[in-house]
Length: 167
Image 1 (cartoon, rainbow, N blue to C red):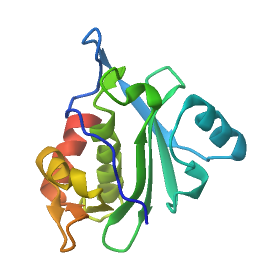
Image 2 (cartoon, helix red, strand yellow; image 1 turned 60 degrees about the vertical axis):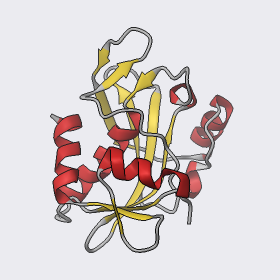
Image 3 (tube, helix red, strand yellow; image 1 turned 180 degrees about the vertical axis):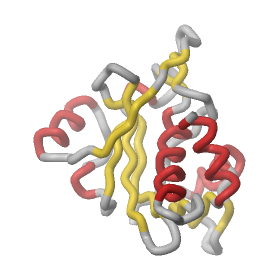
């Protein structure tokens, strides 16, 4: 089981170009990660093999009107919740010199929306890297499910994320 390690750099209404402050509307859609898509991602500097996420659904986040992937999330829908297997910002959106602010929050909002739409009341579960547990509780409103790294985003917080990103 992979632990989630994406940095949430801010909760924004859309993606924001870090250099200019310009707001950029987004789109997202399910993706099939074929060998050729994975090879392209690898060449661009993506960290994970997205063919082996463990998730049933992989969704790509893009800027409206542009096909360049800004982030990916993989999740499964279970009886009572959505489980996030893997989430990653594109190489250009990591670190101090990232291009866009808000990718991580937006990816979690996609999972929250899937939970709400599938009748799971916004419940989203993940296993976080230990060093990010406090960060996710602060930024996403996630709560511990017992083992320190196992977190859940619940209904009210999930709806807040969806309203922020999906309006």
